[in-house]
Image (cartoon, rainbow, N blue to C red):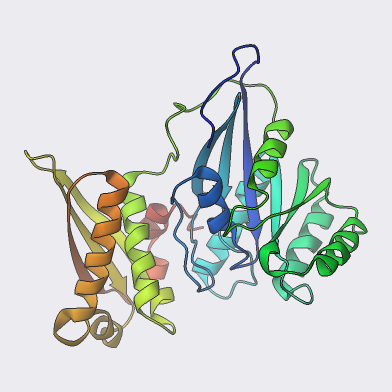
Length: 307
């Protein structure tokens, strides 16, 4: 991440929304481009729920990267809110970057939905395509994919990257810098995200839940930072509530003699402390709230539109 500005050039500022199907690699790419972890990453689909903002300095450009929830056919209110957020962010940005997993043999149902929507809306924004995971795809297949997507006549440019290794990242940042227009920087050059620390901390805890638990439980829980205090020693004391929909889910979350929740809390605390660069104490409480997915306040805390 370059934080130097060429004094002979005017400042540039713009937003880039990264959209795609679940597990396309959006969050991994944003983390790579920003240079540190700001968006949680797991092998499970639909990890990202709300908008995650990463801020990158590249020469004289301040580029705001928006990691959006994966786009898929929604079945629940929460799903619909996530998909709506993704499209809202996309259409409010200067550049739309569609990320496709290049390892797929054919376009997935979700990818077809996205491309169809991009065609239908006839957006006047610049739309580019990013083929991800090129480190594990043969060159011949990549060339065929490029030809296929070029024929769609949607994308102004096509890039090949590996979000995991960083291959192609420099070229991508250079392109983003060229796409955006002149404008004053909106953030201090040292800032890497505008997300509140309380939300980042809640997201880290949710990531640890997704890593520790399986099946439907991680998708049926929400994490809320209830309190955040700094004591006289400069140590941070955080209390978080994990909402689950069923009593048996609470029991699974706690684990035998509370071992599971202790592991989740320990892993989350270490990562939050690393992020904040301060000693951190974290207390987790698991509560049953059957209809939390119908609670407007929780949606607001997640950065989602309840309606």
